[in-house]
Length: 565
Ligand SMILES: [Ca+2]
Figure (cartoon, rainbow, N blue to C red):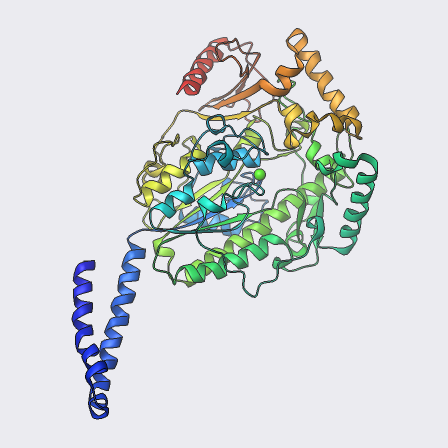
């Protein structure tokens, strides 16, 4: 086809060139209409070639949301205002049993974007950079670049500064004319900026270097008297929209990633999103106790939240703070939902939606008081289950959700198959295309997640640092450690529990099985086992491992098999 067009193009050009280079003024007058006609044909054919190149491969709009649990309208939570995500779910495939591979930002994102398990790439905590550990690994956007795409991002896709600029992105976002909001410490309101500055001064004076390990923050939430672009998520959406308008003018298909920072702490959003909720109608969870007989190292002490101004540094949160935090989290969800509405509307305006695949995913869940804690970083359902919605231009049975167990690392091979790209050999996941074709399809029996000693390694493992024991968190860290020693007795060994203990969590159809292992010896007996029966106990309130040994043996065998393959 391209060859025929090139020949056609060339035959159009020959008389035109003769006119331009061999003509006198009178010839020019006579040739002018012919010139215009040829030019029009040329532009049409050029446009056709560009469009043909672009439309032979679908574009990808890849939307990530930080710390978003599947508490959305499309997951049956009618108290949440998420109309844009809900609409996409009714038009596409909403995955009701999607799980992250580790419930913390960097390992979850690195796993999804490399299509590998956290163990395989060596990224099991926030500070490890997958690229340093795996210099030649090909990431998802990098694979698209290698196959002729422009790939670019706005906002948080990889974690922190580990953005893999050299390999994963090849196109500059268009920020022209847009003003990045100035929000010291993430705060838009002057009074909260002052609290942040005072807190910083105080922490540095009290703890010196240790204060830089996450102790300096303003309030946990803020209802900002600003517009959408008064916080980064709105601004990043505006950047993505401008960039999209550029991308559609190029002669390559595109991979545009837009990453939202909310509802990650601090729960800051424009006030209009707080106003969508009535405080009196917000209900804290009924399941605020740790699971009976659960692993003492499986739950942390909500360190990350407690670093925020106004949150108690120890003990349970009272109901009024719990309700305020829930309100603010919900406001952040609605704020992000509105931005997702903006980018999808912008895509529709470009007339490219019919050739674009849309993916919306959250990197992990979040305990909003469930099991008595606030934060991510556990192996339980509430932290590992994530929202995932995929929309394609041609999928059947739109709006019918899937109940197949799936893992975030399945996204990479899915997008390869949808875009007709070869599947890189290093990928661990399975393509979700069978589920996109048929919502009843089941592609796997288990979703696996992992987390090393959450009690000590939440909040970027800061509780492990010796300086942290000198801060106001010292007594809380000691309490957490005492709780582990109390349950584990002679199995307590500081080096093991701080550095080598890994909790592996298998979510099957009925059960969640968690096995705590010494990762130095794959053949050693498990240190502790947990089993939760979702048929009778969907909120994981009782560890039934002791009374269901047959299931424990079966699932331990399945886990061993998965770890060996
Ligand atoms: Ca996150």
